[in-house]
Image 1 (cartoon, rainbow, N blue to C red):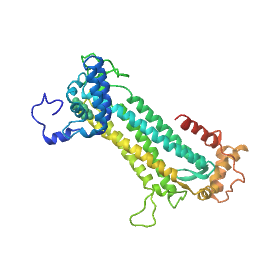
Image 2: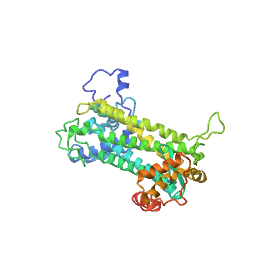
Image 3: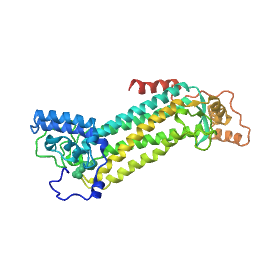
Image 4: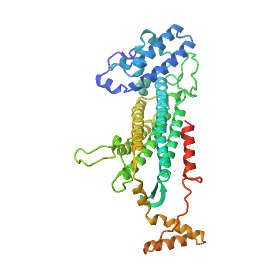
Length: 410
Ligand code: ARG
């Protein structure tokens, strides 16, 4: 039995049914929450009695707890909930449509997914921050073009990861802000003649309320950018753990062996994080393409909005958790890093800048030092100038500032 069986007499073809059915079980508890909110509005308008409201709320709590009542014969989670509510369910759909209902539930889902992402990002950032504290004085080569460039500390580099993650928190917060409005009251697209009280933060335009999926796009964008960051972190770990670099050793809790080569310890976590970045970007571009050109207000195309968000939520959580285990178990080979950083050419820029301090124009200084590098007469200065990076107060101040942002602000 469908919610629209009064209109369509014949049964749908089985394949058509299978094609149309929504794969939306994950939405069930969120729809129960949105439905309870709607029921309270119905009660306030005198359409549900106080007893009926109690019954609906109690039943919804049960359904949210135990999703096993959602059957293959239900068209989607909304129809299932209406059926599972029993007799009182026949009153519940007054003044609403699945068009506003689905967005109300989906917005609650995205809000939760954003909060979950921010927690997992914080956990990884805190591990990077503690790591940066331990490795604050560990000297390593810094790279541009993957060529040794200038000496840095490992702590400085790890704090760059913390900055990337900090911006990711901001992006998920922005997606949550976009999701935090309510489409309830919009009905199918034009509201209803029943005088229901408006929900908190009701959207201004009922047509926009059922057509808008920006909050889902914002979430997928935040996830895509997060994954591009994680893929860069992953790639650095892959490089550093290689015998060629040898800067870090992978922990056995987050590395894998080879089925054939007995000696291997592989950075699969870092690689899969890198690989999943492609999928994360695909989810964003996929939903953008779905929404592109859709006439307002609701179209069934929009049912495609949920699968990428469900999958992204899972990947975001699992990838962050796995990377947190990996990073917290990395063993640093400081001697190896120091040896690589002892390459005298890393101070070529310092030598040029020493000449600048003596009044030589920078371009002349650059050419003089470059010539000495080319003909092999380059000598590194006896004393390297102190490095102010990563900020004017040096690494200690940068660490303290990051702690204030991440720990005190939690
Ligand atoms: N399962 C649908 C979706 O996810 C719910 C809305 C269906 N609305 C409709 N008018 N057929 O979009």
